[in-house]
Image (cartoon, rainbow, N blue to C red; front, side, top):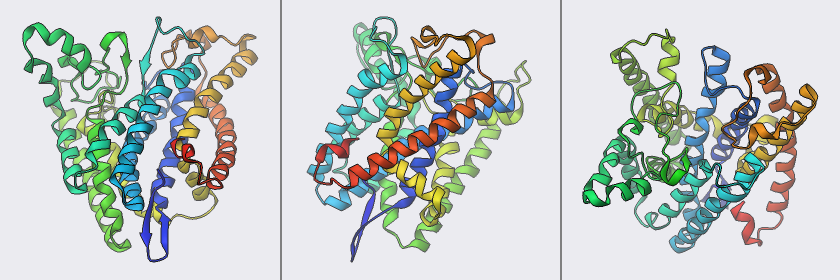
Length: 402
C-alpha cells in the first residue's frame, strides 16, 4: 500500500510514513544481526541493553503504519471492496511467506518438526486479514475500538473460560495464537527478558500473538484521518498525542517500577523502566514506542536531504527489505564465522532466531555493528533497484504485494 492523499493536483505521498518506516526497518536489522552474533536480547551492560531496546520501536511502527497505509489506500481508491480484497490477499500471502521463505532464510532448513515459530510477519498478515472486513467501519470508530483492545487487552485472557470445561483445553491451544491463555503470559509489568508472554499453541513458538497488535493496526487506521488536517493542525495533534503518550508512560512506568517488589539483581531503575514486556506488548510498551513515533511525524514530513531520501526509499519497499535482510545477515554470519573459526557453523542457526552459540564464540558489539554497517548499504542499493523497477511498472499488480 502506497501512502498518499488527494489534492487538487492529484495524489501525493505522505513522506513521514515512508521515512519513519524506512528508519525502523534499518534499526530492525541491528536486532537480527544480534541474533546471529549470539549476544543475548538485553543484558546488564548499557551497550547490550540499548542494542535490544532501540529495536523495540520496529514492530509497533510496522503495525501502526500498516493501519495508516490502509486508510490512505482507501482514500486513494475510494473502494472499500478493493482495499478489503487487498488486505485479505496480502495478509494470507504474508502468513504463507512467514512459514516458508522467511522461516528458511532464518534457519536454512525445512525440518518443521524440530522447531517452528511465528514472527512479526505472521502477526502482520493475520491482522490484515482481520482488518479486511473492519475497514467498512468509520475510521473514528475503528481507531477507538483499537485503543480499547490495547488498554483492555488482559480481558482476552478469560476468553477460553467462556467455553464449557470439556472444551477449554482445546480452545486454549487455538486461543494461544490470539492471546496467551496462561496467567503468566498476560501483559503487565515490565520484564527485562521481554519474552514473558510467549505462547506455544500446538508446539509453535508464537512471538507475536494477534492481540493487542490488531488494536494497534486499528488505531493506525483511525490515525490516518489526522493526515487530512492542514499542516499546522496535524503538527499540533501529533505533538499532543505523541508527547502525551510519552508523559503517561513516564508517570505510569515510574509508578509501576516503584510499586513492584525490589529485586536482588540490582537492575538500574532506567533499565527497569525501559525494559517493558514485548510478548505480548503491554500497555506501557506501546506507550513507550508509539508515543515518540507519533511525535516525530511532523518532523519526518518536513525532513529533506540525502539521508531522508534514502530512508524513504527503504520505507516504500519494506517487505522487500525484510525478506532480503534476513538472508543477507545469515550469509554474513557465515562469512564472519569462517574468518574467525574456519567454519560457517550452520548448526548454531538451525533454530534461529533462537541460537545456540557458545559464549566464547559470540561476537562483541563492535563486530555486530560493523556487520550491520556493511549489510545496510547493500540492502539499500538493492532497495533502490527494486523501488525503481516497481515505480516503472504500476500496471503490474503483484508488485503491490512486495
